[in-house]
Length: 339
Ligand SMILES: Nc1ncnc2c1ncn2[C@@H]1O[C@H](COP(=O)(O)OP(=O)(O)OP(=O)(O)O)[C@@H](O)[C@H]1O
Ligand code: SF4
Ligand SMILES: [Mg+2]
Image (cartoon, rainbow, N blue to C red; front, side, top):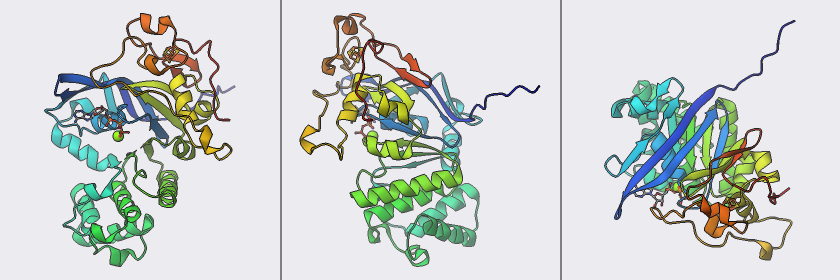
């Protein structure tokens, strides 16, 4: 009889023990501290956490976009498909960035060049990375504008970024990101600057494109509601570290870290009056001033002496299949999810 082998999903991105230091006015400080994760082919991974938790720096470091003299990036592994990103020269990295990893940022106006038409900016990416002719690149750029839902794409091709609304500019950025059919798209708060209806349209567009093209997506957001809509799995970051990683169902039904419980409690809910919205008391630690022991302890209502006594932050522990948490007390706690 033939044995049935479990199907292991192919890994597109493998990040192991990523550490990023930045130069501050008080010297070097670690802002991403030992982050490890993988992204499977066709998977959408969410990264959530409060402002300053290291979400953007994690992704900028993977894409080789941290400023060289003001930052130091180290990792035991940083692999994108067959590429070892730690060993690439700047020009090799720039090539990989164009063809294999694409990024979409929060404010599309700052990423688009105001002096060139929108169409030229998409066509330029196709010419540079795919060697397309002028004519082909124009045709493909117009088709991309159409695909991302820009109406009247042939006319819009000749317009400048200021002639587009915020939502339409974000569609242009998505077209640029898709131009070379990347294996990974990193979307860093792509909807934060948009109004709610447009946000929903952009999220839906990304979801459709992801399904259609089978690429992997890393979706950075403050909004756990968006995570539930688009992601398969989520990393929760706090003070430069992953504090919990789980599937979407597990994170919402049975969080295993008090910080995740706090984030879930701060998501507005239709079934509760707005006065019951809770936010996590206190502030995240400042860069270069991490608390001893568990980094979340000053804000954690479940803390005990043991949470501080160890002096170093707890290790990530197994909390179930595909579920890890960085909380010493997770076995004893029953935390509130939202379902
Ligand atoms: N180039 C830099 N030089 C110095 N400090 C930096 C630099 N880039 C980021 N930092 C610091 O690193 C920390 C992590 O920043 P990061 O931008 O990754 O946060 P984030 O989780 O993306 O937050 P937000 O949700 O506000 O975007 C912050 O304290 C930030 O001030
Ligand atoms: S280790 Fe202690 S302080 Fe840290 S999250 Fe768990 S209970 Fe809270
Ligand atoms: Mg950010």
